[in-house]
Image (cartoon, rainbow, N blue to C red; front, side, top):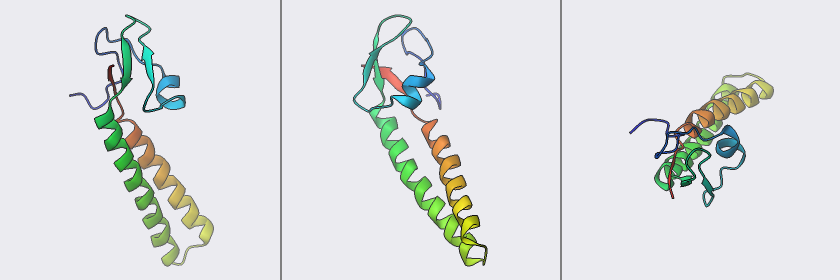
Amino acid sequence: MALTQRRCPKCSTKVGWARLWLKPWIWARWPCQGCGAMLRFSLSRRLIVALGGILAMISGYAAGEYVRQQGFPLAVALIATVATVVVLGVLVLLLDGVKLA
């Protein structure tokens, strides 16, 4: 199983970024632009993404608290928190995939 499954399993047409990033509803079903097969997001991968997102938020909070306890200003702790959540969040979202509906 590939780490990223962002192509139609039937014809290998790439799923557009707008579908993956702007309209990623778990219940969404849409036709493939290449072959017309109905696609949906993989629920098992969505569960992994959800759990990873929670871990990213916890890690971000922990990073911010650690920086703050080291005596850095609150702004630096906030930057550490946001940077950690964004980086880990994007990495987790890369695990998302599509499959036939």
